[in-house]
Length: 61
Figure (tube, rainbow, N blue to C red):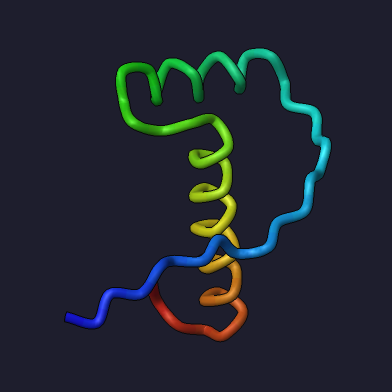
């Protein structure tokens, strides 16, 4: 078995403002799940970036 200790990718702290109702929506969606607010936002932004890039390339997701 070739176990490798995972490394955490470098991160940068960014301060952004969210509308209160959006924060409430996200918190309701992740309630009771093994997910943090940050993890949800990161996954959502990654999905949005991928979608925009695909649209720019003219490919379907």
